[in-house]
Length: 584
Image (tube, rainbow, N blue to C red; front, side, top):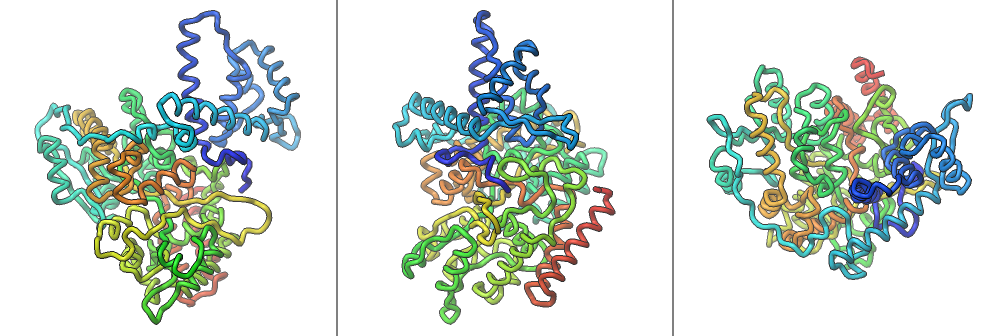
């Protein structure tokens, strides 16, 4: 994908999401000035710039008419200002159709450069006003990171009481590395005055349980914990209650959440859940092992292979790299995450700035891309990776890569960031204190001159309310959900083993940051816009896609099928699946 949408050279410390946050902030500041000072007139050019940049980074169409309307001045005046912007090289007008009768308006590279320059200076001014020095101002992130010197206090009890008898009922995932169980469950229950009942299930059982519960007239639960890839399926089938009105009335600070995590909980135009626990897939590297052989930490897949070959010493029980390669879900997920490293989603998603739109998938966008050239490069990379991996890598289920890595048997690992808790809190692990956490290395075999950013697939767990909840219980369910996703409670979860937070304010807390370097690393990836939703598109067929890939890719890696045969079979099976579902 073209890098036209990425921050211009010199502004790598600012993501597109932060730019939009700054524009939104400036708009909120402008509204009261126009309210209280009638003589202040609308600024047509500024209004058009804000509208254009918002639509540009959302990948949405801007027509001359819609742009003129956004100027908030008489149409003739708006057209003159638009023509001035065209003449000054700030706008680009492109035909949308072959006839040339319909045009689209786009910001020029110069306008994008100026917008980032302006936003960067504003951000620096805000940072200095909040007492940050020049060096700190450069790393300041508009959200909650200005609270980096603040310690979030322990959570107070939930003040809102239910108007009905009985406890709040929550269905959640029983994560092997972190779960609301044992002492933590008792602690949260105590803070909620004992009015909570937790039921924990393995991941696949949880999904099936929520689907079964949705078929009942009234849900047995008030809150359900949802894996991000399920959001599309649950939204399409109206299993989760839209939360937009609750959020608007509660003034939830969405800027405090990692942009990709918040986006992942939004589908079909509605916010379906609130992030609780983030789990991006990142790259673990044993820094001490690399230093011992004089190899630099890798940033591309080619460098991964070179480093792995030097660090792969099977006779000593040490392997170059480890990843989750068991059949079905583990290897299926590994494949789509490696595919994203080569710049491509598994489906024909609509390109948008910074990647692809995974929240509004329609028609041809459901078509699989498994037989593409980039998919073949991904498959070839996986075959080479196999040669420098543990001999049982094709039997490793989800989460086991971190066990192998934490025991000192691998120099590198592709793994979800939250799995770092398995060795970062283990005094006996040789990995503890010796790990660098990096975004996924970039696929290095890309032809042409296209430059791509690192992409670490976002994952995690969010909290939603079943659509078939008893209406009498909605308000208490929402207030409880809001409390459970507050900075205070999320900090509690992080310090009890959750380790990675979806909130910038929690990651900025000094007590949290000292727990593990993975916390700061993921926080920086989020600020740089490297955590993305599109590698794991939350469509209703997601799990079925993973199952198909998990079978075909595993057969390929076992050498039961050629690369071409495996990819073509996966392509045809997923294509049939989509046709049967009448997606296109």
